[in-house]
Image 1: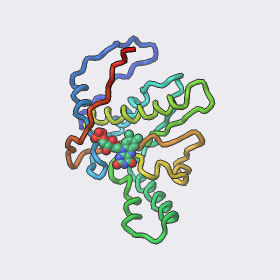
Image 2: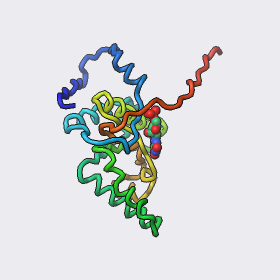
Image 3: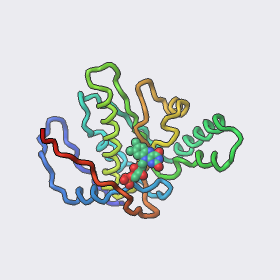
Length: 208
Ligand SMILES: Cc1cc2nc3c(=O)[nH]c(=O)nc-3n(C[C@H](O)[C@H](O)[C@H](O)COP(=O)(O)O)c2cc1C
């Protein structure tokens, strides 16, 4: 998308509409699918688009105005640098190959032009339950998926093994109370997805 016009973000206190009728948004949500990272290529979001994506992610509801999340952007050469860390960690943890396995790690973040790490940053022992803070970080990820799609990009929410590896977390500068909520891969689909199996929603009516 070359003719990107960033939406107008409101300033604090600005009166806002309570609803925004957008059949297009409903269609987007009804038909949205993840595109697997291996089916992504260039282009990715421009600097303006990336800024808008993150600003939309940062407008996610959170209880207590804690903003219990932060973002780590991986693009360009930094993706390969991160891959080198993953490879090193894996070589140490599982020495002796096979080489293809290490190569996979080296190239992990090269699958998409941009990866946005969403870090859940929980304030422990505080009046806002930790559970709610974690949920908010998950909602940030979902907001990013939708916004990326609305900008014309394919996206996927992944954690994979490295979201949980303490050496990788240390290399990323995660502190105590911080966890990876997701790595949001964003790019252009090289292959369109098809609808997947879905179970009907489990719904009951509470009748007392
Ligand atoms: C928190 C979270 C972590 C995920 N991590 C992975 C992962 O590590 N590997 C994977 O193949 N899919 C992972 N997924 C699933 C995909 O992102 C995607 O949701 C799924 O493939 C189909 O989703 P769709 O309904 O958006 O198409 C994860 C999903 C969530 C919500």
